[in-house]
Length: 289
Image 1: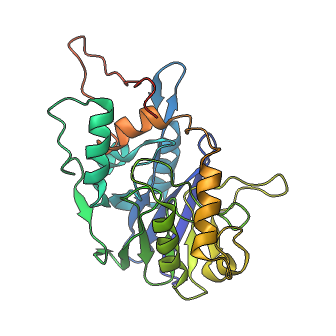
Image 2: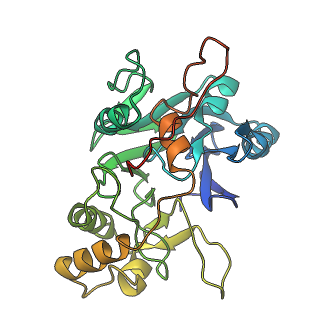
């Protein structure tokens, strides 16, 4: 790893999501990747305790946050991107195919006509191959669909890659593909793009669901994934993977927070507009997922 770059992970234990603060130690410029908003589903209450802990870390180091980067519209947690946008005057970026996801879920949730599935809720929509430079940090955008059509990975200075919901730790495997627009065939191809990187490349995962014999881990190398990943290690064919992934997905329940998460995250983390009583509401479509 470039000694001018520091990567710090923060685990949200409720959703088992890792948020990353990536800093350029020369300029003190930084980005935040996949931040989590705390949400008490049973009470319908949001709070920013986790985000505030990350902000305390940022402030103590004197970092200048310029971007909040989303790997996709998450289905298992609400995004805290607006918290960092407003606190640091940062911009929010996501993959350009978010427009397809917005169109799908605008129809599913029958969202208000003012919600346009054009990606304008975000400050920048990244295409495959785009470059984002923040100080000495140079992110190359990799479009890695399969989990959703809009997933992207961020390849940092050629040596580390933040893969979102594509690969998990080797003993956990890969992300599910049964959400609208998902495809196990497509995910396999996307993962091969990641595994074609040099073997020493560090992979930073978005989630970890550890077995009983280890703690949460956030980082693994491409070489370790190719050797040990239970779903896509060397020697597993595409047809074998697709059969395994589709059979496994058929047994999975929907994520606990998928309904509130999607409605917020397609809006770049903003809540639905308040109604005439000044209260925001989350919809629950019956018998649709």
